[in-house]
Length: 360
Image 1 (cartoon, rainbow, N blue to C red):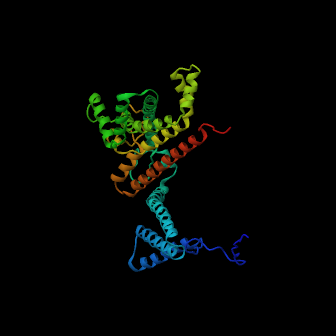
Image 2 (cartoon, rainbow, N blue to C red; image 1 turned 180 degrees about the vertical axis):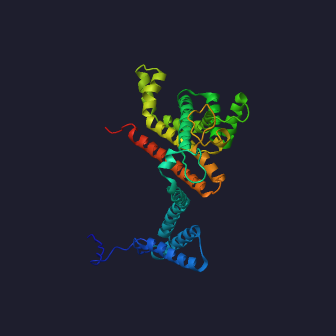
Image 3 (tube, one colour; image 1 turned 90 degrees about the vertical axis):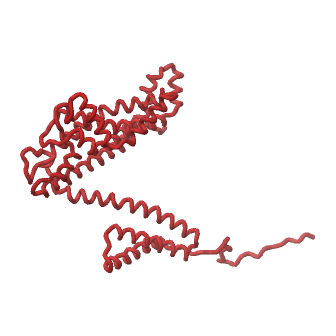
């Protein structure tokens, strides 16, 4: 006669026993309340001792994080407290990194918006003493020099990247890669001195030309183009190359018709970001271009003005009274930031609209 053992069923409404110690849960608003309380406490400290904005943010983040950790450990346990602590540290690090960026943008916009008018974009500094004048000559000089830089750097950079990915082998490839890595870390002033020394050999000391600035910026832009284009070309699947070779298409035509069109979005993005990288350089242009108050569209004849150098001289040599020149310097900095942001937006649009379509 068999015996069957039965386990008594749990009472109605009784939850099964949890594994480990049961803990409560903090409401969703608890972390925010902790940081809000920390902010109020820091305000009281500010009233008592006086704190600047950086210390205010730092103390708020530290006290809020400690509060969240303590509350979570008390209510939810050590494991959940550690998770929340790491989350708070990551978010706080991001917030602290944004403080100088937001402060910089705010300061430049607040100081530069006053002279952001038609006169600033339509007039140069010829005959201007004190109030008035603009940066038309510097804006045009920046566009001319940047266009020349791209004209020099983009073909060299793209062809070098194609060689490294498609043709390069052995020690020559290693040497080129090493030189590109070294060029990436060259200080900008060294690029300016190189361009000045090169042109001084042919035109004598003291020469200042727009093309000199383009050559100096090319030294900085070429390695950026090579590195970005090389990584993009490596992402092209080898199956596409092999399918083209199987149809009897020569290698050069495969590169032109298959590889480059597939990677065109990444190549365009890399080139645009490289242009944004050099458009705000100042040190090499101080050595090679100098400054001029009039408009010069010929990069092979005399000095040219660019926005970075224009802002530098307006700030360091403002004249009397100095405030008008300082205002122009802030507005030039604002225009430069707008140009760089615009180029970054263009890079994202290129990456989105020219990427190969993968949908079926």
